[in-house]
Image (cartoon, rainbow, N blue to C red; front, side, top):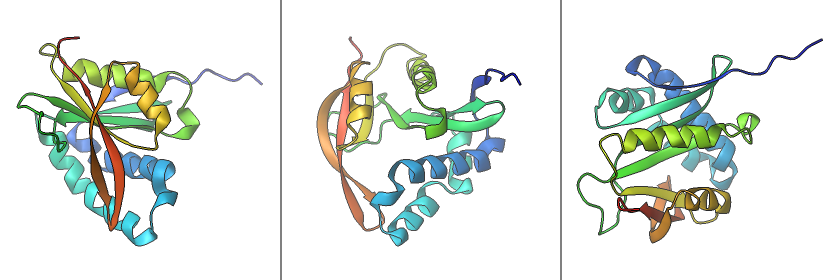
Length: 178
């Protein structure tokens, strides 16, 4: 028996992918953080943040982009980006934000998360360098190291609300002039 090498593809999602985006967003969030929250908080957050309708609105907006990572035609990760909405006093019009970057555990450690991130960074800077922002859980040290390798540094803190739970988050920034 021979095993074939999995084929990976990164593509920009379109409005017709709204259900797929909602599904992968919810599955990756639950896989990554699901055990941290009371079930009612998690259920409210998933319904509020990752509904098919909300994903369709995001996908139809020209200032936002969602990229899907597929392995053999099955979505195993995604990244979302758009204008910065983080609560930091130095956020300026035109600044971009990585909103989400998640890859299912089964597809991690092959370099595809970095390729997905490179793809979303290229989209964010398609018109030239600009200040970029990321919100990351204060206890997610692996993600903080990953983003640090790309020049992102801690610029502030805020609370990320999941139902009735408030998580301590860091705001990371990479200035346009690097």
